[in-house]
Amino acid sequence: MIINKIQDNFYSYTFPPRKDDKFGYNIYAIIDGKSALIIDTGFKKHIKGVEEDLKTKEITIKRVIISHFHLDHILGLKEIKPQEIIGSEDYEKTLNIYVDSDKHHLFTPNTKVEKAMKLKFGDFNLDIRKFPGHAQCSLLIEINKKYLHVGDELMYTNQGEDLLPFIDKSVIMRHISSLEKLKKYTHMIFLPSHGKIVKNKEKNENDINNRLSYLKAVDSKSEKISYEEAIKECNTEFHHSYWHDEIYKH
Image (cartoon, rainbow, N blue to C red):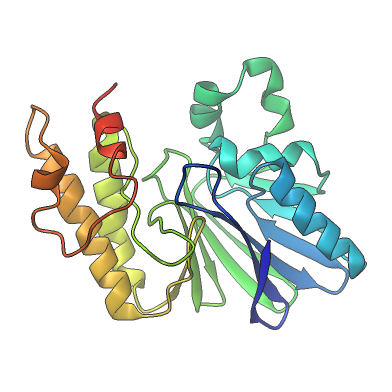
């Protein structure tokens, strides 16, 4: 676990990839006195690491925002008992895919974002809005008009290398739409759930355009196209290129 101070009372906790993967995991923590708000929980071992570090400072996790309800973002909820869990009103559309109905209560948000909400936590003002793309239940989280938590809309390795978008072919247009909307925020510092923080406007623009180019190429043909053909107009090589084949399995 690597702890990075983003600014006073704002930290990222970065965890290494699992075996045979290239992408790590980020949990972000905002501090207000002895209380913490975190974005996502990762897997159990991830949130345990964050909680143990905060406890050494006598800080308790009070609030959790779930960027989207894929397992690597929510399973840590089994380990903590925050007063508030914030998530999209569409959370069940994702939970129904991955979690048995009798276990939904372990992950159900008690504050549901219907369209958008504002939240003040210590010195931080958060604007949280529904942003379906990578997942139907994705949220976009703006922090102090400076930082933007982009969830899995853009994914990287911990060294900042590009990861291939991973989305079912049937909903590619949803992800294309979210990436197009993300263009208006490229002046901000992007906080991904997986990978290195991006502080450069030109890089943000380039990274969005590369993913759009890939997804539009895949979507442009009814039959399967090769990975090489799909990235022909991209100026990057994506890690986890084998995800390309996964897109066509459903």
